[in-house]
Amino acid sequence: MYPWLQTTYNQLATRKQENKLHHALLLQGPSGIGKTEFVKQLATLLLCAKSVNGQSCGQCQSCLLQKAGNHPDNHEVMSEKQIGVDQIRDAIKKLSGSAQLSGAKVLIIHAAHSMTESSANALLKTLEEPTANTYLLLVTNKAERLLPTIISRCERIAMPVPTFAQTSAWLIKQWPEPVDEEFIHLYANSPLSLLNELQQEQSVPYADFKRGLEGLMTQQINPSKLANDWQTQVEKLLKWLQFWLHLQVKKSPQLSPQLWQLHQEAIQAVKRVRNPGVNKVLVLNQLLTDISLLKSH
Ligand SMILES: [Zn+2]
Image 1 (cartoon, helix red, strand yellow):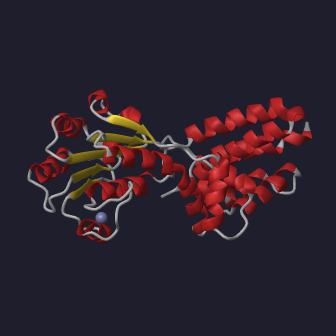
Image 2 (image 1 turned 90 degrees about the vertical axis):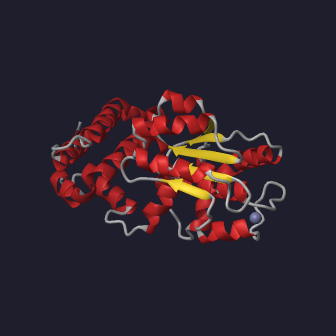
Image 3 (image 1 turned 30 degrees about the vertical axis):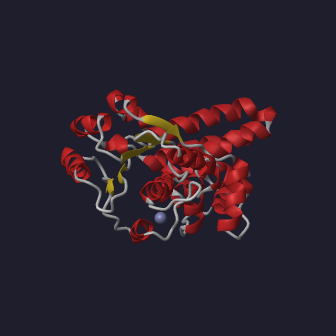
């Protein structure tokens, strides 16, 4: 279990042990903090026939099936785009019979906010009157998109976001090479995204990003050259720029009015490139141009 989720996990495990766990949980929190892994481990615990001290035993038939990914009483619904009503009806049908392994039944709904309105309505009755020994685990990073009727029938569990210290400590074990502290700050609240960024073959590593900015500020590199070099990842680099400007505001109080304005511009740029049809490189180029003018005042 990820260290920052351990306390939440223990609390749920204790309540399960005391038979005080709500049958419908809404696990909500931003992406990149480990919700998927969390809900899988929770499901394994709920299904385990011989759990000890809030831990699944890892050895019973249920745990072994779960490990192999084919437990007959563990049902999951997910979708790339929208969770359709048929997916929900299918899942509910599977829950209606008795458990194959005579234990609990679990239904996990990943990205629950992507249920259509009719999917959500199809789920309501089951949320209200679940079949015996059934747990419904809804996971979301966009709880605000869920119907209020769904939310009100679940117990909301806010998944904690790790601190910078927790992310750094965890990262050392996952990634042996030194990582720029700024880069950790950039993704501190989303450690899985951070690791993913490091593992991916980055077309623009953070060190190159900083070098590019340095060149820009000292007029060694012109903005359009940089915008062109970074054109394949404009969205990401605009977010990096937004973050970097935020850091500079804190670091250089004497420049802060200008930096603050640039930071606002970066926030707008991040939003603007989400619209289809926008020339993203042009947006990036504009921001880089404005940054390059910073020190010539
Ligand atoms: Zn077990």
